[in-house]
Length: 406
Image (cartoon, rainbow, N blue to C red; front, side, top):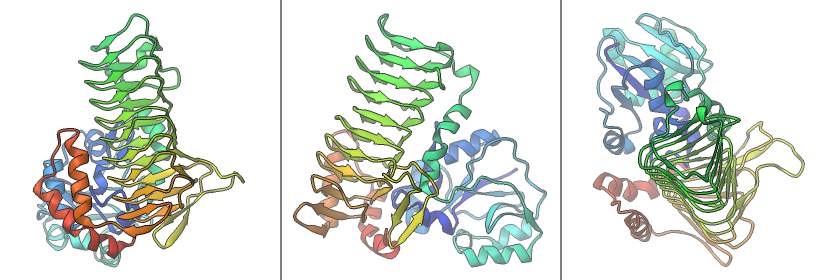
């Protein structure tokens, strides 16, 4: 195909607050982002992205991919919510492939390419009109609908992304560290596994990227992915089904969770069945619950909507740049919004809105300039600076958050 373009549709709103700071295609599951997973599965690069206009400039820089460009004859539009797995074949153009009420992909001839636009794909009514106007049919496609599905599928995808060629150890492993089932362990260049650390790949592969420090008395259980530059602090326990994005610092216990990157969980406490955005700080003792006392299915509050996950186990959704104080306890199925500051020193509300400033004595909405100054300090500690496109987005974030209410 001449163009492979990922598009966002109206259900991208279901993934707020995780997609204020990134595109849908930039969310992770397993070892890869959704964008990288599509490219890997189809064995060809993604050559374009269609996304919301207010995040388009930033996505173009982060993904190094043209954004919201016109399509060419022969282009294939693929839904960014597709957790692609297994052989995928596209029908000949022109063709609109349905998956329930959603579009899985569109194979374009010249005429169809001319009528499509990023704005149309974000409009559910306009998308349904395409079913009647062009050749269409039902296809099987694994389209994610809610963020907890990323967590639920993470263990499966970590196993799926492993290949025999990954079995290599180029880093330094202490002679007194323990590597169990080494045929399913990858340790990249400049990574170090210190004495008494245990890497257990009996249940699934463990992939440790480059420049990782696995400190003494730590335990890593597969399937797990440890991104570049991560630090696993002494006595940490990284349990099965966990993905740590690049340059995360972790301690305590983590299980079945995804950390997007640059996350700071540097102290004791339990994090389970959670999706954590980037640049999040979890204070000492932060712990979340993953199951209700009744063992019933978990409901998640997303803005003014309560959604039944249908799942017995789920922990938390924590948006980018959220900061949680010491001893913070998160109830089952909790949501902490983008840029929220939570420090009530006990059991948190089940839903904390984006940009909220919540303590034990007051609740308010943070001032955006104050927030930007804080972000600069947080990122500066890692020698990272906000770029102009990020600053532009932050200036607009209060209005955007007000529009979506999550």
